[in-house]
Amino acid sequence: MISFLLERTAPLPPAEAWRRLTEWPRHGDAVPLTRVFVATAPPSRTGTVVVARSGLGPLGFDDRMEITVWQPPGADTPGRCRLEKRGRVVLGWAEIEVLPGPGGRARVRWHEELGVRFLPRLFDPLLERTARAVFGRAVNRLLRTA
Image 1 (cartoon, helix red, strand yellow):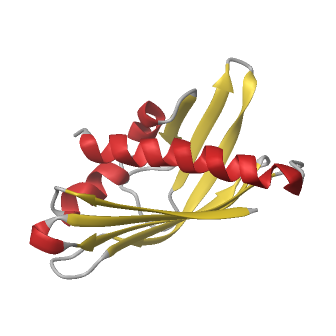
Image 2 (cartoon, helix red, strand yellow):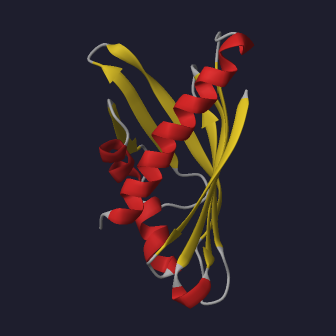
Image 3 (spheres, one colour):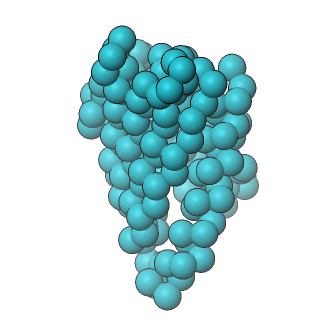
């Protein structure tokens, strides 16, 4: 298992940053070779199941996640979402926090613990570099585009 933290400041109000980061199907546009769909009825809340399908055609796997914490940001309170990874291949969790920042801007923290079943620990440094790059670009893209 690896753990990493990404932090960003976006020129958006916290509520808009939250909306962009928690529109789950948009994550598929931001992560290569991935489609994301919500397997439960909207709106997102505790218990919502999100599935990221990664791969090409039949050569792929599902990263099934369940929202275990859902606290949208308020006027002066941060937003927090925790997804527990419950798939057969990808393990761990991700937490997204959106906090009020200076000048009405949003501060975003994406903290993730990630493991791939059957991948030896020897590959953890490569997994961490790859995850930081992929998720860092995804967060940037999600915040940049409406």
